[in-house]
Image (cartoon, rainbow, N blue to C red; front, side, top):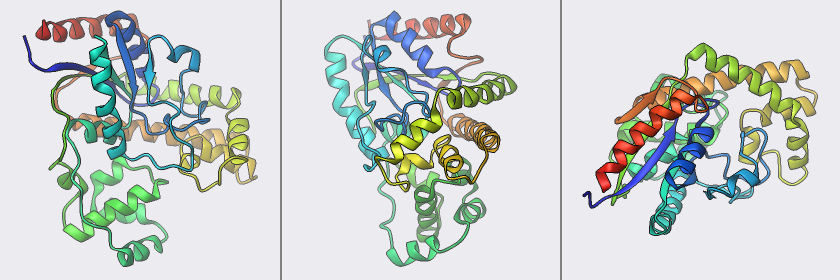
Length: 307
């Protein structure tokens, strides 16, 4: 019998059906789901983040959804601390904790820990912030970091550049020397890897469905509550909705841009997760019967280690 406690993670690109698979596994194995998506922590940002409706998050229990206002900052370190605080109560209830989400940096912060990195230098940050295209500069200096950071995420881009310029090392190299990694748990990582063209087609359709479901109306309502500079407004879908609202894009242009950038984001997520070790990759979408059956086999085999 293992002295460690089981922990399951369901990872993969956006649109691959992670939530569906995690929900099915939680019902099969008496689990509770912990959100590992950096945008689903924000209250009110529902349609554009593909958040499950509240009613579907009650049974089995879901955690770390809708815990922040758009004015707040929820870092990877704060995520790791929040999960570590949650896990003992979940396991004490005899439930299986299931982490589900596509924010790879959050998961890495929890499982491996984070290096504090170099202290920021305000003068350097100011010089970098004044540049017109910092993401292009990062692509030259640290291509791996640029591949996993969205071009619109200016804060992460600037931080990655600071690390590269202050240390002479890439952010991946720095963060590989993690501190405060999760202990006491043994992890099974299931990764969804559907066929690329099928995934892109599904993402294109999902963007249209989000728009038809009221994404633009949700974004403009949230704009009455929060400043347009709030972090979630830079996310896929919300940025295009606000550009449409402001007359910078037509509806057709907004949807096309949202589709293109969502496909690119999915590709970056796969690049990130492919660098992770010990992931069992499942070649399909979460709702597929055969993918669920394969997941059950792997999870049952994993849980036998703790009997």
